[in-house]
Length: 224
Ligand SMILES: C[S@@+](CC[C@H](N)C(=O)[O-])C[C@H]1O[C@@H](n2cnc3c(N)ncnc32)[C@H](O)[C@@H]1O
Image (cartoon, rainbow, N blue to C red; front, side, top):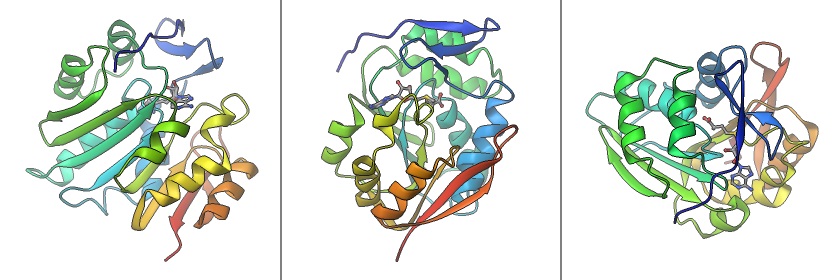
């Protein structure tokens, strides 16, 4: 599916900010460290990695979370394959993604491999040690149709107050329905509505220390 990109603005010339949601795509402090803290540690990764480990993500954005997870997986599991499926309604143009990647010069080969397949259409892409599946469209419509299950979820919509549709109780129920046995979810927000939505969906939910200026974040494990 080919999709029209939203206009974005740039903070400090390098951090993309969604004009639609009035929110930056990644942390203004240190996006890579935040991803590691929130989404990797929040899902007990890399300790749980195994061949064919499946990550699901709401909000592909710049692909920063993918690059961080892929890099950690490649270091922990050489020769194995990570499955990463992300749901995205307003994909960045190839030009904006390339510009966003300049803010994090690590991951050189992986950035280049992602850029090479990021031509403005979604689909499945086989990259070294990675099976990437990006599904364009509103996650409220696309996630219910997905036939996969994730071992770990990265819940990464914009701030719940600005992007409530990506945090609704109905969508959290879909996340739970698409979570493997003993699967987990993590997000940077500790908003009460989000935690209640995850709990109602069948997760055991914990509020833990957040990254940087954010005091708390949320970890969740599907109740067995
Ligand atoms: C904070 S950004 C994600 C950042 C991203 N994970 C990264 O590594 O750069 C939130 C993303 O959610 C997407 N989004 C917002 N509403 C959506 C919806 N209803 N369905 C799918 N994606 C949505 C936005 O377009 C945006 O790319």
